[in-house]
Image 1 (cartoon, helix red, strand yellow):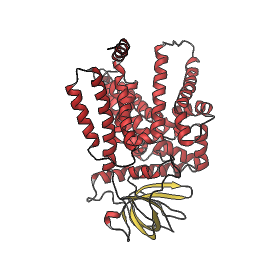
Image 2: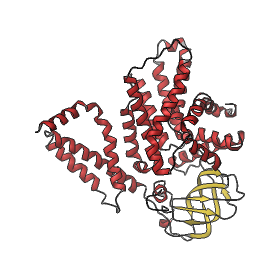
Image 3: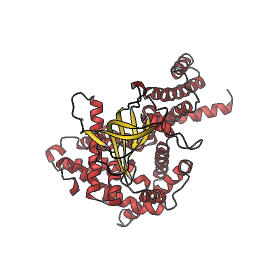
Image 4: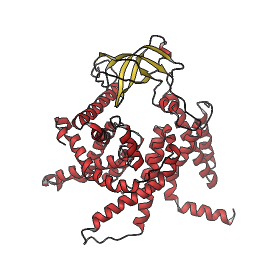
Length: 474
């Protein structure tokens, strides 16, 4: 073995604490390799590679290079298999040609109330001209004009047109067909005239599967919450408030939504680290404070661990309410690991935490790797943890005797966070959206403190008052 190779191996061995950080990278390579194929490979491809590499590693484990190479191949094959398995498990009928005008009936799964009319997602669809094996499981319809007050769980019928999911407008652009495929939406279209509600919600019926009943209940609760917010706060402000609390952006006018994007504040509307972190943090601090006020409990019980566990439950409920998008899943997984570290008396915030969160998402939702949400979210988080870890190692001291240093450092921290996150996400933003926020630094310095210190705390109070019917007082 040459001297240079020995040096590389020794350096590699010395850095063994960081080996786990490469695991989601190799799994991601496997996911990406599957989605780059032009045709579907045999279902056993990934499993066969895993078995072959595993046997090679087992019999040649004394050879360090073979061992490392085998582990890398196994990780790539696992990512490939996860993507293939996910693709096969969500397989569903996709409409092959335009149908209509005809009568379309089904049960509402989701309602989005836009300025120019609602957009609804239907399941249990019935069409007169399709056989059951050709029927899409779900379809998304855009309606216009005067429509009833829709809610998830209602059965409706409407005259309309259905078409196959749209193809990319040009090579390399956003692929709606792939997105709708993994959302299990097999058709899109539009309604003609006013829809008719033929049956109210049947969420509580005994013949509905538990999973369907739970999904409809959550969709109804989210829709009802968003509608209450928009009724209490009319106009664009109510739409923004509903987006911050429930993740439903449909009530935000296009001009306002575009202003958020241009100013670099669109991340505030995505239920991600800021929102989940604030919910978990405020619940953790509030519950721990309540326990601390009871001496018999505070002096005898691990109230810090109790508060961490209850904060995880609260963050999970909020994540489900917000639709559990990729940024929400990433944020929940990370904050849960941090709070679990509190429970087991370990340090939680590190790049390992990001690696495990990324690995979980890649295995459960491998298609998210190709989306802007996954790429922007993890690019920002990795850059922020790495940068602040570097600063922490420099042991920068702060003078706590001067009162004004803390708020100044807070504002400076927001500015630094914005610069780091913008630098990390700019390549992805330019690639996906062909634009870059020009005023992100100034906008975030003003908007983030207001959101973190005023808006979101009151939003949490509203959620806590929701079971009592007093949410509007929050």
